Length: 338
Ligand SMILES: NC(=O)c1ccc[n+]([C@@H]2O[C@H](COP(=O)([O-])OP(=O)(O)OC[C@H]3O[C@@H](n4cnc5c(N)ncnc54)[C@H](OP(=O)(O)O)[C@@H]3O)[C@@H](O)[C@H]2O)c1
Image 1 (cartoon, protein in one colour):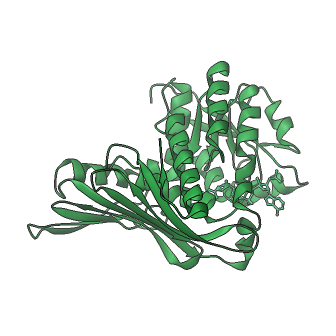
Image 2: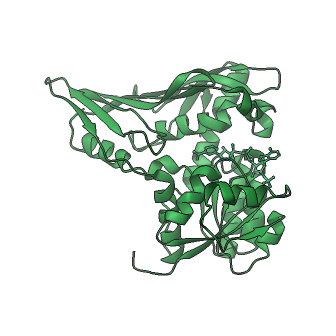
Image 3: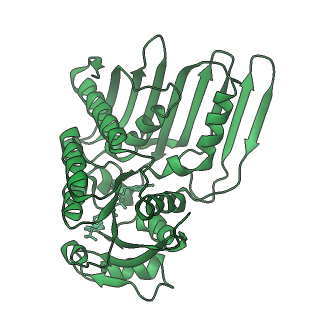
């Protein structure tokens, strides 16, 4: 990093995910945690005491608006409920803040287009928080593919599931249209990682089926992305299954599996691969924290005027595919993606 300045961060909500992001901002060498806001009395202070107890100079605000009024804050992290992301991203941009917004950045492509325009008008950087992409294990996967070990990529399979605990039911207590349910929560990862540059292009069509509950939320889904020429990515995710957080890639000459894609910090990254020629290997990588790497990357982009690795075009494409998959579920048809 060419700049020794630290980016001054504010957090726009006292969400559970701060358990990961707050220590990540504190640990990131080019970042400084300056403030946190919550609309609930005491919640911001409690969150700070829980997840960053040693940080003594963090300002507490009783509303997100008050935090956005603080001119000393350069960037905000938005961990609000998914349906609030676009609105607060736009509000933060209007106040000249750079924004790292949790996934999904928005529920519609139109909202991301509005964010893109506002970011350009206000000369700020905005990135969707797909933290897993900053884990070095995906670079290693790319090296294995680029070395030709498994041949041409033909099929990808991504799986993200866990058994929903009663305390987490709030994640499915509203309709899909309001950002609730498995698709917006974990399906967006399964689709995003199926779009990793394995095929080098985005899909042309999607087919999906899902189970819904009374609230209107989906709790499990299976689907197929069509990348043309017989290349497919299968994705499945849900809250009624044992925990899986993995992807598998089958090529013309072998295959590989990344075992802990959305890994927690204490889960060892493991990649196993095999070839038709009889080679077989399990690579155990060093533990790493993709949340800290994500924060360091975004701070670096802002401080040194670089383009974030996850672009708004990528955010729009993911949102487009998610909405096409939801339409496929509703209509029981394959949906073309233009
Ligand atoms: N990257 C990841 O690994 C990861 C993991 C989990 C979630 N996420 C994403 O992060 C975002 C937040 O998820 P989360 O599960 O952390 O959300 P959450 O705890 O439900 O918090 C979301 C917002 O709701 C408010 N809130 C929190 N607890 C509340 C309560 N008991 N009663 C009323 N309001 C409450 C908070 O705003 P106020 O403080 O202003 O009230 C908070 O910012 C989502 O978009 C999700 O998709 C990402």
